[in-house]
Amino acid sequence: MIAIVQEPIDVNALLRSVQDEAVGAIVLFLGTVRNNDDDGAVSELYLESYVEMAQEALKKIDQEATQRWNLKKFAAVHRVGNLKVGEIIVAIAVASGHRKEAFEACRFAIDKLKKTAPIWKKEISGSSARWVEGVMLEDNQDGNV
Image (tube, rainbow, N blue to C red; front, side, top):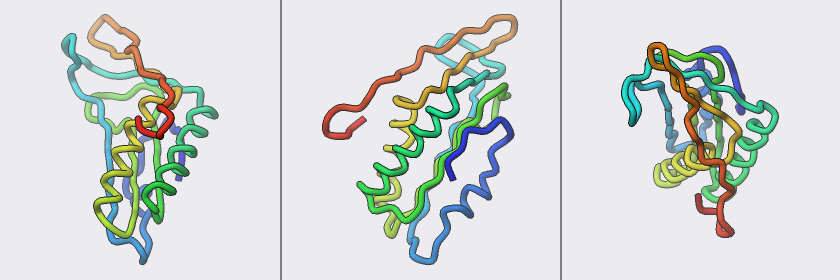
């Protein structure tokens, strides 16, 4: 399951998509809208994306993580549109035979997503709004992010 969606993320469906009898560990990461940033209060976020390119970035992350950590299954869903405090922005689930690989792959996936996927975020606070500068960098030669 790889998707960019406008509707709320169904975490249970995401988890079901990575379940398998050969799996010994599933790690789930949920990124949520918090009520603050470095500059003060945040009441909501607006996210937009170049959907086709973002989905391709997620597929590449899936392929690389699956190969590096011998994952059994991988799923990632990212929301776009207006999101309120507490709502899920991104969900990543990885399934492997062992917990160490699952944790490492999940951390790699969210870090790589934030650096490579064309997804932009505007923080809204009362009557003000500002686009948050992202980090759109390709990883270095050895595949680390």
